[in-house]
Length: 512
Image 1 (tube, rainbow, N blue to C red):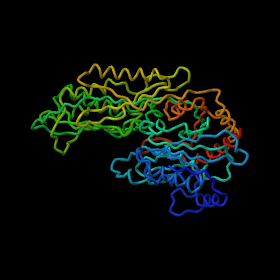
Image 2: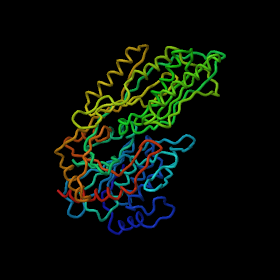
Image 3: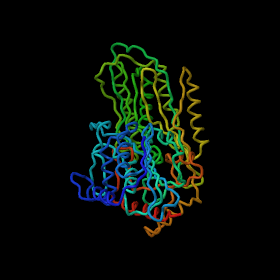
Image 4: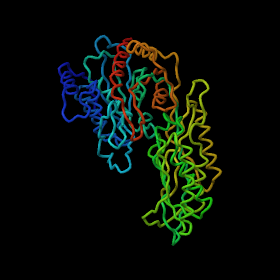
């Protein structure tokens, strides 16, 4: 790819500010402050950018760089790096890396037909909050892209040389950060924008690994005379599988296995398929199974499901008040079913795989140390796959949970196996971080209060940057966002301006 190294001149910079900050028609976010940020937030929101579909947004950023004479580099999978020299008086300062990711989780409400491959997010404002319209918002991490572009486009913000890295595939295993060539960076201090709490500075995170539990599918022709049914779980609160795991929300895949297990314990049902979940970082809110039941067993099947449903609603009435469990007729023909051995193996695997919080930190109060989320369930011609994501602040605990899953597969035999991907290291908290000290002073100067320093159970790409760049010093900041990775995702637009002021104050104090 081509690279450009000439900075935009002052005149063109003023034109950019006018375009970004002036009166604009047909903009949902027009008038929100800072205007330059919300200009780019809305621009990026218009671009389809689910994981593996980031080329268009990467090309948009490349054109942004070309228009301003900034050096940039795109790699083969559409990660993009944009560099900007330091402003006057900061030319010789140590570079600062900005980081965010361009992909978003794509999920829509039941009955909402949104083509995420071709359509951007339809924004709406409700009071202090920006939402999608029946879909995820993508504030995770459109916020990061918009903050980075806003600083790159500025002409009046003092800052050191900037190296802006915007990665792809973060939401599906941090593939962009794993692939990115960090030797292109010269900076040793990094500000990330993938944090969602403006009252804190983020200073450490877990690592994670994903495991595919693969059960070979043995198929048989569907017996004649059986009634096809659909068992379903829906209406769960869902949420981010790392930020929200401590809230003890129900997992639709786990609940589906309980329903199927109760049915298999009493009735000769035949299982045709199972599916659930939307993303490896989302607590599943929906799951379903297609099964066949003898006509004579229909009443008993419904009784069993109603009984399990009553139990589940009692268990999760606080965390999941909208939980729905049901059994309904399935109108499509079912030509084949899984063998009894395969069906039972699926239920056993889901039931016995660890799920939820596994250990709490004994050094940081109220911090989840390790967990596992059964995140995705699918049926193919060859296998039934159960995908888990295992975050932990300590690598050995992550691998110990993985080993439990692997030993379960070994006990089941019959070709069952576990494969792994996206092994990401943790980013340990460093109490002596110089960048954290600068950010803390900037926070106190800006808001006249001390910030909370947060170490989270979430796994970010920062563990990979910590591994790739020895001695790197990092923090993460961001405005307030809730229910990321769900269709309830919302960004508190009133918290963006304070974070914008904080970021400018941090940069002003990085002159050395």
